[in-house]
Length: 123
Image (cartoon, rainbow, N blue to C red; front, side):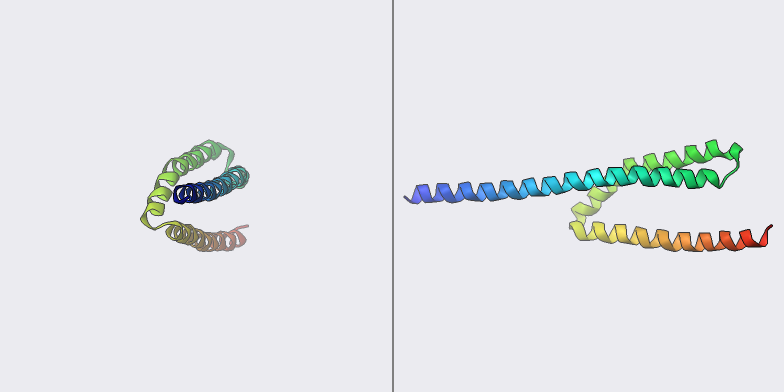
């Protein structure tokens, strides 16, 4: 009876671990699909906005630089994210992403503020 009790308890533990792993795997798949969809929309919007702000003869250089940066982000992002995740779990990844978001917002606010004020001065 002791052996059968241990066998049943180990089976139920394995089922709960399997359900937990399946749940986490499903969450990762859903987040990955949403990320891929939003990444495409954001990249297309960024490309549309930037090409509209440069002359026609500069659009090729801009698109080349833009797509090079997208490629570097796709190559280096997973490696950097994995290294940060292995360092301390989810919290450092969240902190790094939040810091990048805040710095990007501040940079764009300053840059767009200068651009809009200089655009007003020039007819």
